[in-house]
Length: 483
Image (cartoon, rainbow, N blue to C red):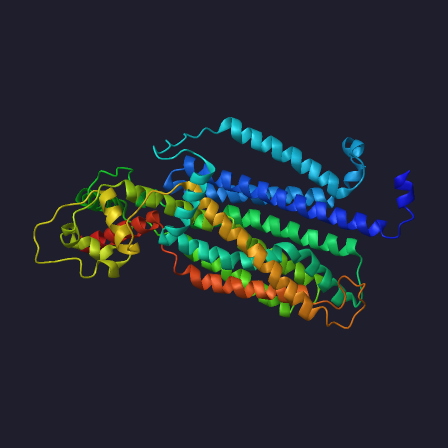
């Protein structure tokens, strides 16, 4: 009865609309929280189960599966799910049925992961009670004492995702604005959405292709990798490398062909910088885009940078975590080891300036260091910090925070840009796309931030594996030249 009386209230529709919007916003943040927790847990599981030298490959596969999932999602969104007989009992509405299908798929895949993967729980420290206070203390300690290499990755991620969120949020809307400019009028929301979804589908396909091909350019040659013996000292490793090169040279001479040493793959840092530069330039190209075809090409090419963004930074930060743990677990080295360290290593070290002044050629006595001791020395010399073991899940959570924080920054910046640009536009206020350019300016702001992130990415150090590969390759080249 009261419901019938309420129909006479002219404010009823407004109240219902406001309530629906409030529920949708609350559910969005709950969903965002749950998905971030799931993503962080999956990355941490990958970190725990994967050896350091395979982390780049593992994260590449993680990215490929993510892009494949995007293709499935965009394909479902483009289908008329109201015509699917199996979904008719759940009512009408495309969005409702897409959410239902993704819920089923997510439940099945998470269940498979939980049932098939087994991780070893770390022992809890004697002073830890496992309560909420301990969790807060661990997070605070991790933030304040975050290792310098990981801190630099997080700084780059902040600028990178200030660039990424405008694209992720507004790519479809931007397509509608470009379509309105091309036809000289207001397009239907359905046409603009379909054009945007098609472009995003093409972007996901590009991401899958790039995510499959690009990791092979960064694939590590096994001849440059360590043999897994951290108790091998520097002299033993150098002798082994020299003997290996001599055997390769003898084999090449016997076969009558020149010696081909292993080649260094593309370094992860350089790939990341290239991806950010490409993304920034694509966002700046919005100044010149005037047709739907051009906009589709731009969005599709963004798939290259997105494939890199889903792979490289996670591989770098996980390798850094392994590096910190390995350095922290290595036995401390006497201070005189800096001065007595082998001169050859100063010549082929990945950062030669670090060792300048540390060597004394007049000193004929030296103590060969184990590989794990050498790792500790390298870490302390390059960062100026004492390595401290870090909880991988906590560090990945902080890294995830660096990714999420730009959402709030972009919400404020985009609001200001829309107010300045679109509110002054001389167009019909009922138009969604026609006469609007605010989204283009938000994308350009994101592109500028990505270019700043590309500059900061040059401060990210090579990973431990890359440094050791570069050092071994330098030793191989020196052996080839001397023999």
